[in-house]
Amino acid sequence: MPRQLLFICSQNRWRSLTAERLFDGHPTYDARSAGTEPGARVRVTAGHLGWADAVFVMERKHADILRQKFGPELAGKPLVVLRIPDKFQFMDHILQDLLRERLREHLPEL
Image (cartoon, rainbow, N blue to C red; front, top):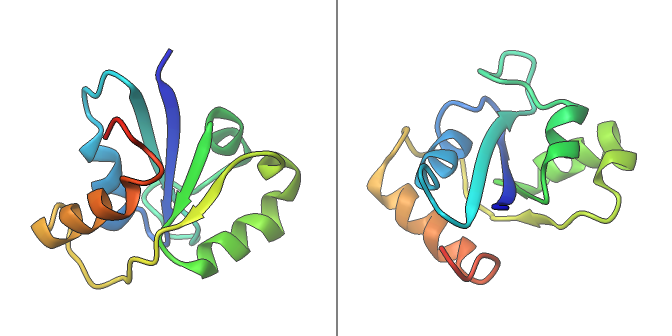
């Protein structure tokens, strides 16, 4: 069964959605994405966190929000801050390279 990865940013329009798309058709990983803000394309829920084996957030503020709202659902799950600022468009090549670079140490089969 593929390892289930959840990517989180603010609006789920550019960064986390790009990260999700990087894993389309991947044999080892299944990815989904969501956002923390009320206007997000897909807003993160406890169900998303329950589904995920590992959670990746773009900024520390996203980790703080998740811990505050979903502490019990995060218990025992890896929560990784990728430190990727909100300055890229969807599928930006620099963003894709940055995601691959930051994820490599956590996902060896990337």
